[in-house]
Structures are given as structure tokens and as C-alpha cells.
Image (cartoon, rainbow, N blue to C red):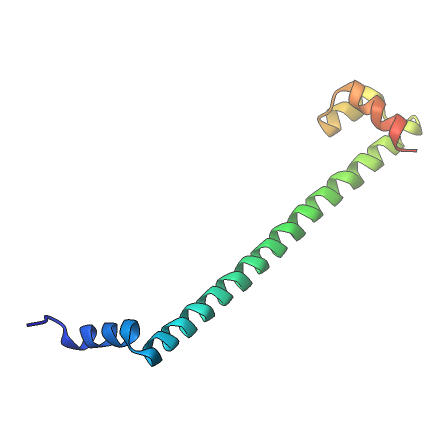
Length: 97
């Protein structure tokens, strides 16, 4: 005697009956599609946030390099503000014309 005959009947239907298998396949395809869409949305959001951080950092770097070029900041001050070595600041000065 089965403990849960209704559940057992449903399981048999979903596993053994052609219509049940089609139903289960449709459900699984829908779940996978939703998961993919959710993953893409999360990826876009993460990419957008990363792009904003990189853009902010590049803008800050450009501004500070410009201030060094104008003689407003020293290379040492720029290195501290950007958490870089003085050598890295010199490279930025050479590369960002």
C-alpha cells in the first residue's frame, strides 16, 4: 500500500505517460529559460557597475595627471591620491597626452 497514492500517481504520469513527459519537459524548459534570463540580467547589471567604477577611476586618473602637467600637483602627491608609485605616474604622464 502506498503512503501517498495521489503523489505516486502524479509521478508515474509525469515520468511514464507521453503527455506527462511533455508537460514536465515544458516546465523544465520554462524554468531554464527564466534562469538564463535572470543570469543575463545579473551579468548586465554587474557589467554596468564595473564599467561605472572603471570610468570613475579613469576620470579621476585623467584629472590628476592633468593637474600634474599643469604644475598644480607634484608627482608624489598624484601617486598618493591614485595609490600608485611615482614610476607609474611617470608612465601615465608619458602615455596620456
